[in-house]
Length: 164
Image 1 (cartoon, rainbow, N blue to C red):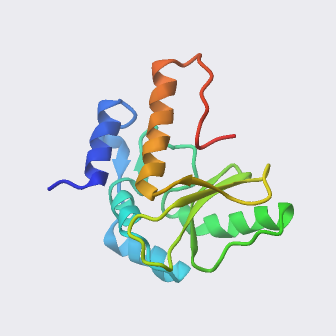
Image 2: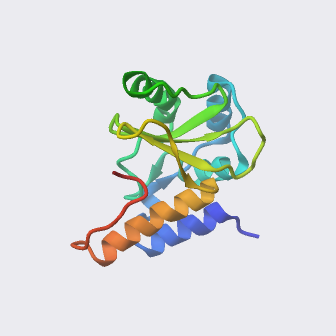
Protein backbone atom coordinates (compact mmCIF):
# COMPACT_ATOMS: atom_id res chain seq x y z
CA UNK A 1 0.00 0.00 0.00
CA UNK A 2 1.33 3.42 -0.94
CA UNK A 3 1.25 6.05 1.75
CA UNK A 4 0.08 9.65 1.60
CA UNK A 5 3.58 11.07 1.02
CA UNK A 6 4.20 8.88 -2.04
CA UNK A 7 0.83 9.83 -3.51
CA UNK A 8 1.56 13.48 -2.76
CA UNK A 9 4.86 13.25 -4.66
CA UNK A 10 3.02 11.74 -7.64
CA UNK A 11 0.57 14.65 -7.59
CA UNK A 12 3.44 17.18 -7.54
CA UNK A 13 4.95 15.49 -10.57
CA UNK A 14 1.62 15.34 -12.45
CA UNK A 15 1.10 19.05 -11.73
CA UNK A 16 4.61 19.76 -13.07
CA UNK A 17 5.60 21.37 -9.77
CA UNK A 18 8.38 18.81 -9.47
CA UNK A 19 10.11 16.04 -11.38
CA UNK A 20 11.92 12.95 -10.13
CA UNK A 21 15.17 14.88 -10.63
CA UNK A 22 14.03 17.80 -8.45
CA UNK A 23 12.82 15.72 -5.52
CA UNK A 24 15.03 14.50 -2.72
CA UNK A 25 14.05 13.12 0.65
CA UNK A 26 15.88 12.85 3.93
CA UNK A 27 17.54 9.66 5.07
CA UNK A 28 16.53 7.96 8.30
CA UNK A 29 19.85 9.13 9.74
CA UNK A 30 18.98 12.76 8.94
CA UNK A 31 15.50 12.42 10.46
CA UNK A 32 17.03 10.98 13.62
CA UNK A 33 19.49 13.90 13.66
CA UNK A 34 16.59 16.39 13.59
CA UNK A 35 14.96 14.59 16.52
CA UNK A 36 18.20 14.36 18.46
CA UNK A 37 19.32 17.95 17.92
CA UNK A 38 15.90 19.38 18.74
CA UNK A 39 15.11 16.93 21.53
CA UNK A 40 11.76 15.72 20.25
CA UNK A 41 10.04 12.90 18.38
CA UNK A 42 8.71 13.86 14.97
CA UNK A 43 5.16 12.79 14.05
CA UNK A 44 4.84 9.96 11.54
CA UNK A 45 3.10 12.11 8.90
CA UNK A 46 5.94 14.65 8.95
CA UNK A 47 8.61 11.92 8.92
CA UNK A 48 7.05 10.37 5.81
CA UNK A 49 6.83 13.76 4.12
CA UNK A 50 10.47 14.51 4.90
CA UNK A 51 11.57 11.04 3.76
CA UNK A 52 10.08 11.92 0.37
CA UNK A 53 10.59 15.70 0.06
CA UNK A 54 12.80 16.81 2.94
CA UNK A 55 15.70 18.20 0.93
CA UNK A 56 14.09 19.29 -2.31
CA UNK A 57 10.53 19.45 -3.67
CA UNK A 58 10.86 21.09 -7.06
CA UNK A 59 8.85 24.31 -7.18
CA UNK A 60 6.54 23.25 -4.35
CA UNK A 61 7.14 25.53 -1.35
CA UNK A 62 10.68 26.05 -2.63
CA UNK A 63 10.76 29.54 -1.10
CA UNK A 64 10.00 28.20 2.37
CA UNK A 65 12.61 27.46 5.00
CA UNK A 66 11.47 23.89 5.46
CA UNK A 67 14.22 21.76 3.99
CA UNK A 68 16.97 19.83 5.73
CA UNK A 69 19.33 21.02 7.17
CA UNK A 70 17.80 24.53 7.36
CA UNK A 71 14.83 23.17 9.31
CA UNK A 72 17.19 22.74 12.27
CA UNK A 73 17.33 26.56 12.62
CA UNK A 74 13.62 27.32 12.22
CA UNK A 75 12.69 27.33 15.89
CA UNK A 76 15.49 29.71 16.78
CA UNK A 77 14.38 32.07 14.01
CA UNK A 78 10.75 31.77 15.12
CA UNK A 79 11.66 32.58 18.71
CA UNK A 80 13.46 35.73 17.58
CA UNK A 81 10.39 36.80 15.62
CA UNK A 82 8.17 36.22 18.67
CA UNK A 83 10.50 38.09 21.03
CA UNK A 84 10.32 41.12 18.75
CA UNK A 85 6.52 41.07 18.31
CA UNK A 86 4.49 39.41 21.06
CA UNK A 87 4.38 37.84 24.50
CA UNK A 88 3.49 34.45 22.99
CA UNK A 89 6.26 31.83 23.30
CA UNK A 90 6.74 28.39 21.81
CA UNK A 91 6.91 25.36 24.07
CA UNK A 92 9.94 23.06 24.08
CA UNK A 93 7.81 20.42 22.37
CA UNK A 94 6.70 22.69 19.50
CA UNK A 95 8.39 21.97 16.18
CA UNK A 96 8.69 24.78 13.62
CA UNK A 97 8.67 23.07 10.23
CA UNK A 98 8.37 26.18 8.03
CA UNK A 99 9.93 29.61 8.44
CA UNK A 100 9.16 32.20 5.77
CA UNK A 101 11.17 35.36 5.20
CA UNK A 102 11.54 36.14 8.90
CA UNK A 103 7.92 37.25 9.35
CA UNK A 104 5.91 34.04 9.70
CA UNK A 105 6.24 30.40 10.65
CA UNK A 106 4.25 27.18 10.88
CA UNK A 107 4.54 24.63 13.65
CA UNK A 108 2.99 21.68 15.45
CA UNK A 109 3.10 20.14 18.91
CA UNK A 110 5.12 16.93 19.30
CA UNK A 111 4.68 15.85 22.93
CA UNK A 112 1.24 14.27 22.60
CA UNK A 113 2.35 11.57 20.14
CA UNK A 114 -0.20 12.60 17.50
CA UNK A 115 0.91 10.98 14.23
CA UNK A 116 -0.71 13.76 12.18
CA UNK A 117 -0.89 16.85 14.43
CA UNK A 118 -2.74 20.13 13.89
CA UNK A 119 -0.67 22.91 12.30
CA UNK A 120 -0.57 26.45 13.62
CA UNK A 121 0.61 29.56 11.82
CA UNK A 122 2.13 32.68 13.33
CA UNK A 123 2.64 35.94 11.45
CA UNK A 124 4.16 39.15 12.74
CA UNK A 125 0.79 40.76 11.96
CA UNK A 126 -0.87 38.85 14.81
CA UNK A 127 -0.52 38.56 18.56
CA UNK A 128 -0.84 34.78 18.66
CA UNK A 129 -0.88 31.78 16.33
CA UNK A 130 -3.96 30.64 14.44
CA UNK A 131 -4.99 27.11 13.54
CA UNK A 132 -4.08 26.58 9.88
CA UNK A 133 -5.15 22.95 9.53
CA UNK A 134 -6.45 20.08 11.62
CA UNK A 135 -3.48 17.96 10.56
CA UNK A 136 -0.05 18.16 8.95
CA UNK A 137 -1.31 16.36 5.84
CA UNK A 138 -4.22 18.79 5.55
CA UNK A 139 -1.78 21.71 5.74
CA UNK A 140 0.27 20.28 2.88
CA UNK A 141 -2.90 19.67 0.87
CA UNK A 142 -3.86 23.33 1.39
CA UNK A 143 -0.42 24.43 0.20
CA UNK A 144 -0.74 22.27 -2.91
CA UNK A 145 -4.23 23.63 -3.59
CA UNK A 146 -2.80 27.17 -3.36
CA UNK A 147 -0.07 26.33 -5.89
CA UNK A 148 -2.52 24.68 -8.28
CA UNK A 149 -4.92 27.65 -8.09
CA UNK A 150 -2.09 30.00 -9.05
CA UNK A 151 -1.06 27.77 -11.96
CA UNK A 152 -4.63 27.50 -13.23
CA UNK A 153 -5.27 31.25 -13.06
CA UNK A 154 -2.06 33.21 -12.50
CA UNK A 155 -3.73 36.64 -12.67
CA UNK A 156 -6.58 35.91 -10.26
CA UNK A 157 -6.29 37.07 -6.67
CA UNK A 158 -5.61 34.00 -4.56
CA UNK A 159 -6.18 33.80 -0.83
CA UNK A 160 -3.18 31.74 0.19
CA UNK A 161 -3.00 29.68 3.34
CA UNK A 162 0.79 30.05 3.43
CA UNK A 163 1.26 33.77 2.88
CA UNK A 164 -0.22 37.02 4.15
